[in-house]
Image (cartoon, rainbow, N blue to C red):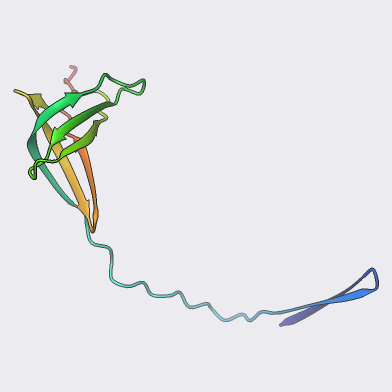
Length: 112
């Protein structure tokens, strides 16, 4: 089905034409699925720890396996960040060339 619209505006004629069919549209097929993120946890030397923010998050500075200083954020709602003897438990999530570091949280205390 095709439709043509004609408008006359200030002496100029404008024509719009559009066609539509009732066939189903083909959906493009995506390539292979994205690779899953690789997650690992390990203790890392703690360098510094900031005071808690208004939302309860705490920023940590730690030293990674290569010796570089990196930031990580702990967003533990009910639990506490895992810290022990000058070390902090870091969760590293990698996907392609992107890496995120977060601080692991201890389980919240159970209320009976």
